[in-house]
Every structure is written in C-alpha cells, then in structure tokens.
Amino acid sequence: MIARRTLLKGVSCAAMSAAVSGISVRSSEAQQVPYSSGTEAPKLKAPANACDCHMHIYDSRFPVAANATLRPPDALVPDYKLLQKRIGTTRNVVVTPSTYGTDNSATLDAMAKIGPSARGVAVVDTSVSDAELKRLNDLGVRGIRFNLVQAGATTVEMLEPLSKRVNDVGWHVQLNLKPELLVQIEDLLLRSPSALVFDHLAHIPRDVGVEHPAFKAMRKLIDKGHTWVKLSGAIRIRRSARRPTRTRRQLRTPTSRPRPSAWYGAAIGRIRPRRTSPTTLSSSTFCRNGLPTRPPATASWCRIPKRSTASAGRPSGVGTGVVPERIRAQRTAVLTRRASEKVATHRS
Image (cartoon, rainbow, N blue to C red; front, side, top):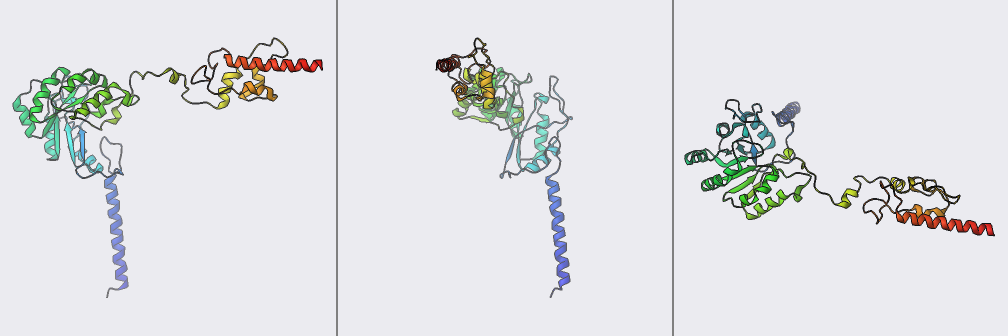
C-alpha cells in the first residue's frame, strides 16, 4: 500500500508541475511579436490549414528600388513565425511589396525559409521572359501584383498583355488600386482572361460602402466567376475624399436630435412679435421653453408639431428668421378670440 504521506506528496508535486506548465503556456501565447500591438491569442481558433492571404517580408539584404516610396525596417521570417504561432495560421501568401520593384528575391528567399506551406505573388513588367515566369512558378509563385496606388514598376497599360501571359501559366492577377481607377478600367478588367484578386477590400471607402460605383463594378466581376476580394488591410480603408451627395431632406435633418424644449424654443421662443396693442402678447411670455405658462387659451398655438410640412426634417422657422404662415394664423386666431372675449366682458 502507498503511505498517505507519500500520496499527498505526489499529488502536490503534480499540481505544482501543472501550474508551472500552465503559466509557461500562457506566457508563450502572450508573447510580444514585432510590429504587432497585441499579445494574446485570438479568442476564435483558426481552422485547420488556415491561410494568411497577404503578408510582406522586408529584408535589408536585398536592394531597394530607386523609385520606392515605402522603405520600412526589417520584418523578417522569424518575426512572422511568432505571429503565425500566436494567431494559429499554418499557410501564407508572401507578396512582393513595392519597395523592391520587380526584384522578387526577398519574396523567394522568405518562401524558401517558411517552407512548402508558403506561396508567392511576384511583381513583373512586360519585359519578363517566359523562362523567368516558369522559374518563378517552379519556386511556388502563383500570381503577379499590380500596385497602382502609387507610381511604381507596373502600369495599367501592362495589365492586358501580362494577364494573357500569366493565364497560360495558371496564375492570377492581383490588383491594388484606388476605387476610382477600378471604375475607369472596368471594361478592361471584364476582358481579362486570368483570374483577378483585389487587395484590401478593393479600398471601397467605408462611408460610402455598397453605394460606391467601384463596389458595383466589382460585383459585376465577381458575378462573372473569376474574381476574388481579399479581406485584408482593413486599417487602410479610408473615407471618401468627397462625401456622398445627400438629399435635401437629409441635409435638413439634424445629426443629433435636441430635446423637445429646444425644438419648441427654436420654433417659437425666439419669435417676438411687436407690441402694437395691449392684446398683442409676446410668444416668449406664453411659450417659455416650449411649454405654455399662462391660461390654456395659449396652448393651441404653443403646441407646434416637431416637424412641420412647410419644411421637411425641421420645425418651421428654424434658422429662417421668418414667422411661418401656420404659426402666424394660429396666433392671429388666438389673439382675435381673446380680444373678442375682452370686448364682450367690457360690454357686460
């Protein structure tokens, strides 16, 4: 038999070992990764064979293009593997950034270090040879990228001839372009024989969304059956330079609805009729903050609807400086009735 003291000692050691192991696992999951502000593992577990569809490697060992505007510090394969471990992806697509022009050496080097789970998207121009395309294909490249957001190694004019050539190899054409350009070259893209992939949600402005012409053009391409959109780079999605045209009703509708008293005060409290007789009463006297403060007789014209048919979306008279016809008629009726009652009282 096992002695009680021996059993308790064994259980204590096992518990301590499990606790230390748990701390170790949590610390590895919460490991700081270069160029990532997060530290914790995602709450949603990535499925098997999950793929990171867009990432770049920057390595100062490789020459930078003379006209490159983006020149970040090194972001190497070991750094990326730390992130990959934390988020749970097992496959990835290495994309040649604009930094290196048509030199794909950094991408090919990264793919070799990552292993067979990586594929690549290269940057080429019309001078590329068929032999080079075959070499890139054998090394795992499966597409070419056109970065048309800024001037660089590729142009719109290269799109059609290169699309035909890479289609023969079974590649796709990846596009990073502004939504306005997407609309302009819609017909060209519809003629493309190769598959198309749009970077970063096609850069559709977030404040316009599905109403943007580029979204409608992209839907046409998707319906054709050979177009995909990357759910990547959400932080790059900007607002439109020109806000969408708003209808007249929308322009008159306040962005934040004020309290009812503010509506009434704007519609009535600042309209002060001239005192022409003792029976002419100031609206501010009877409608302070939009509520009648005198006899109920004044309530018929103090209770002004919040939205008047004379001006859709805002109370009549707001910001115009003119007494609306409806208010004027109601006020005249009240004053006339009160004057008649006063005359009747004097006669009696």
